[in-house]
Every structure is written in structure tokens, then in C-alpha cells.
Image 1 (cartoon, protein in one colour):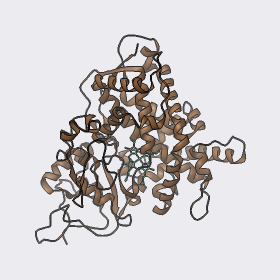
Image 2: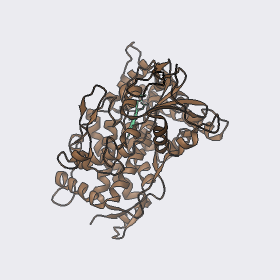
Image 3: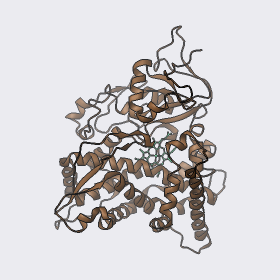
Image 4: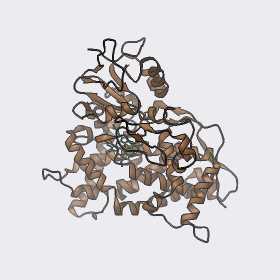
Length: 493
Ligand code: HEM
């Protein structure tokens, strides 16, 4: 029974780790040329079978969880950070219930309040942080901020205020910031590759996990005993939920779910925010188009703005296109992995049959990898995929028609990817939030957070770039812009 071809490598254990780690997109492109859409590469002793393209995404993300298993691929990395009995440290059925609780805690009335909270945090930041001294001094000169630093700080402040609750937000300026930084220090590619090394960063990760979990459990218990007021936030919601078997969610699981939310949302959103800010600053006209969109919908006669609602925000085509196009070119998670639990045949539609006409078999014990970035940057689907073009999503008549090709899905049906008509299915080539049973539940929140952050910046600042657009740093797990990533800003008159 034929295995998929193995990518040539010089060193047995290391395999293709360096090429993949430094430049996954370039690595996949060169492998596709040599081996086709399905091949196996060695990643520090692991055998990883890649299935490229929308058909590859569909094969892996649409597969059954007892065949392609997420826990097997991720638990060694996530459990020391999130904690026990949640996400990938419990049976998948239980995690699916947890996902549902979190999903329902992130809608409706809470979202309405979040718009005001996020606006307040961003305005508070530019009115206080020293990077925005020129803004505060009302200077007419251009000054600069580092897109990654600034968006990362704004993301944690806004996520803490909304998702994590008042207690965490109030402690962010004090103890919590250090703990978070230690925990985050254990959420890096090295931790993915080597779950346990006798290094200080690993010990700091474990200490930070324990202290943060205890911090949450203490709040939960104070709320339960009435020592602190009960609050209708995500923690308050989770505290009231019951699993299908009637069990209330234990305190440590509520705590661990909140840590998981913090980690799942932080780098993904802050990287997207940084890339989006760089893209709009690269094209100052686009900043002004976004500003005009704000003035048109929310401008008051005196030049101030009224608050937008979440629903109104989703109706702003330019803002929406900026976020979508950023996520197309820079999906924070470029590789989605699964552990293979039983031998799986690769569909012939995905990989041509071997010499004897048999199909490839991916053996049990391998890992599989789907890569949204490959299908999102594929020139056979997107015209000039390397160009940041908001018109792909906004202009049904003009650019979109030429820029987006229709795409045959697995049943031969045509899907039109113009004007935002992107299917959310496992067969879609546009998958910044994944697809199938493990699909992201934070998408709505991410749009809300990014939308309010970007519009608040645009309402206050003119922006431009001072250097060529930065390249990709893939070594950080979540793809980040390489330095320099300065954005020049000037306070609006
Ligand atoms: C799953 C991307 C923000 C919570 C995923 C997956 C992707 C993704 C690609 C699928 C992973 C897989 O199949 O292995 C993103 C991006 C974000 C974002 C691009 C922001 C721009 C968030 C936020 C939260 C969140 C803000 C929480 C509030 C989750 C959860 C899962 C998930 C709970 C489910 C994991 C699973 O079922 O295995 N996300 N995410 N994400 N995300 Fe997000």
C-alpha cells in the first residue's frame, strides 16, 4: 500500500523543520511542484502529511474526528497553558459542549456593550500611552508607533475588558501583566515542538498557569459566596451552565476556559490588527475612505462621532473588506494539524493514483496538515493574490468579477467568491477561521474587536508608512510582520 511521497531531506530527525519553520508558504509551493498536492515531510521526528488546496482543506477539516484528531496534535502544547479538563484535555464531545457555552456567551446584549468598552479602551490608550505623546500634545507633526507593539497592547486591554471581566482588566496594569507574559512565553513554537524541556521559560509557564487559574477561581468563589457582586460577563455566564449530564461546570474548568479564550484570541487578533493597520497605512487614501465611511454613518455636525452598534458595524463595506482581505493574505494560523488515528486513503481527486493505479494511504500515527494560507494565496483562484485589494470584497461589478475566479467545489458546483459570497464550508478556499467541527467560535468577536479598534484609530489619526511594506516573520507561530513595522500618524485636525 503506497504512502504519499516523502519530501527529500538531509538530516533524519530534523527533516524539513527549518525550511517549513522559516517559510511555510515557500516550502509548500516548492513541494507542490515536485510532489503534487499530497506529500509527507519530516518535522523533528514527526511525519506530517500535507494536503494542499481547497480539496485538501476539505479532506482534512471535513474528516471525522476519530480519524483526524485535534487533541492528538495539540494537547501537549495547549494543556500546560490552558489547564486540565478543557479543550484538548477532555473527550471531544465534552469540548464541543464547552464550545457551545462559549459561543452563546459571545452574542447579543454583551456584544452591544462591548462596542463602548472597546472604544473607551482604545481612546484611553492613545490619550495616555507615551507612543501617542504627539497626539496628546496636539502636534501637527507626524510621529510613529510600532504596529505590532501597539496593536498587541490594545488587543489585550480590549479583550481583558470584554471577555475576561472587570477584575482581570483592573489587574492588567499590576500583577496580571507579568503572569500573562510568562504564560505567553510558554506558547511558542519551541513549546509545540518540545512539550517539556528543563528550561526556566517552561517553569515560568507552569507557575503562571497556576497563579492565573487560582486568581480566576478566587473570583469565582467570591462571586459564589456573595463577597463580590455577581456580574453578567462571560465568567458569570459559564458559572451558570450545566453539561448535558446535569453537572455544573466545575470552577477550575471555568477558569481554564477563560485562559483558553485569552490565549486563542490574543495573538490571532493582535496579528490581524497589526497587518490591517500596516495595509491601510500603506495606502493613506484607504485610511481616508474608511474615515469618510465613519463620517457618513456616524458623524455628528460638530465633527464628533456617535457610537456605532455591532449590527451597524457589520454593514460597513470598506471596513469589512479591510478585515477580510487582511485575513486572506495573513491568516494568523497558516497550518492546521490533526493526528491520524487510522489508516486513511487519499481521494484520487486530491492526489493522482500511484504507478499501479492504487491510492495513497496515510498511515495511522502520522499527522496531517491543512494550510489555509496556500488556498488563500493561490493564483489559480485569486487574481494577483499578492495584492491587497479591498475591491475583491466590495465591488460586485468591477474588480471582483475579474479578480475572483469561480471555483468548482467537490461536487462540481460553482461557488462564487465575489462580493463576500464565501462559503463557510470545509470545501472553501477561504478559511482564516478554519472549518468543520473545530471551526473558530471567536469570529464574530474578532470582527467586533478589530472593527472597533481600527475605526477608533481612523477616527482620530491620519496614517501612512515610512518604509516598504514589511515581510512575514513565520518563526513566531502566528505569522507576524518583520521589523520595521512603523506606522506614521498625525492627529486629525
Ligand atoms: C478555532 C482562527 C480569534 C477561539 C480556530 C481555528 C482557527 C482560528 C483557524 C481552527 C483551528 C483548528 O481547526 O485546529 C482565529 C482567527 C482569529 C481567532 C484568525 C482572529 C482574527 C478567536 C477568538 C477566540 C477564539 C477571539 C475566543 C474568543 C477559538 C476556539 C476555537 C478556535 C475556542 C476552537 C478550537 C477547536 O474546536 O479545536 N480559530 N481565531 N478564536 N478559535 Fe479562533
